[in-house]
Image (cartoon, rainbow, N blue to C red; front, side, top):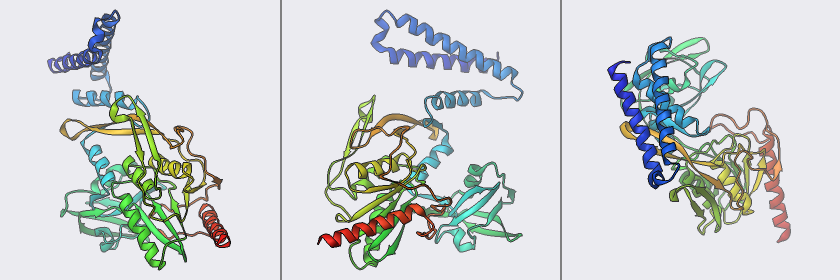
Length: 406
């Protein structure tokens, strides 16, 4: 064993023992303390043995830093499906996704049939101004060919320092077109709004970032202005919304509620146990609300759907949601790294945990393939989208019933 490796392993064993002893605390005086200490030493020795075997015999050479980082990743990711270790780049991406802005060229991309396709350029972005279009296939960035198995790496290469240049080659109609542009701060909208017909609005949320609740309130105000008066009803589309910031989900729910609990959480620490309540003020002033969900609606989306359903504020239409009832906290570490750790279980206002069960819609309507569209800015097609069509019919029926009651 090399001196460097031996030194690192001694440090690892010391850290393991230090953590073990600190967690044991007063427990060391109890009968079980020596056994726990022995177990910690034994496991630390096992870690040292495995590291040395891998370092010596693995088919490819590995350095100590890579081995230790892999050990850390494995330790955290083995806790559950949602906890993970984040290196500096991954932590930066997490922060970007929650703030609603990033530095880049402004395009939504996805892997489609083995190619990196442009879903849509963000309006006003460098990509949109340069002429990149939906449906273009990205084939190279700065002259380096795209590896279709590495979408995350491609996205990383599109991002960079504001003002820096980037060259993107796209394939369109069998012709390769080179676009040169400068990166800049791009605001990522999480809300798309559209007036369905007089008096009824449609709003789709793609994620829950720090700015989502404010964007949603502004979008509803704009729809009301376009309608030249208050809306009679609104469709809130949370389909394929994977979630995001918990406080954003609370704020979105609060927009439609006057009082009551929105969500509660229970965990081991005091910070992990909390209750969030609504404040007076409904942006729709009591107008009808329908929430669309499907199996792609998860986490923060389920908090919103569950709160509005439990309070009887909205009719939930679609299919069962994903069923992620756990709260993760991102905890910064040294050198720009972090861990995302599951710290709480959350509960709907009725006290139900939806983890691994999801939220059952009030009206079950199966998904229509292709809806909602991948692009946030895509125009809706209510006649082809069975779930949206059902929501509109329900709003209209409620509107007629309200008129007859007057």
